[in-house]
Length: 178
Image (tube, rainbow, N blue to C red; front, side):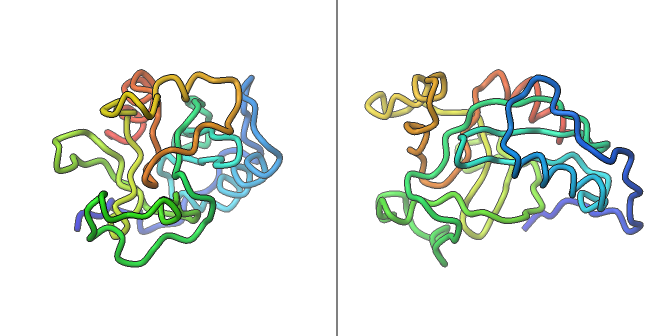
């Protein structure tokens, strides 16, 4: 199902170190961003790094320039490995310990989900996407969780990566719409 077009030629890196400006990022995120631009692994495409521990997302343009950073909501359960076949199950059949945001390198692409919401597919097989936060269940307090000072309450989703709506419109969509 829909894959982004990948450039055939390797892309020469334009930066040796990513400038995070005033955005706070862990040493691991800095090192990974530097490796991506130094190696050309992003193949001349914009890329996203999700720091699940700090519940933060960083979006870079195709040159490795930081476009923005925002808090995120991630999967309720700790872990880096998703559950096989989970994308074929209804949400009501996904157990709390299966609600994982998987770690890894993914080729993401824009599309619309079954509710006609714009999303950035991260892992189609596991139904994992990055999208604007939806506050359909007031008991979950998703909007409030995004603005708290701590990352400890940002684990709530079924595995998807939820970003503030303004960040989706102003950073994610423009980065990947090209």
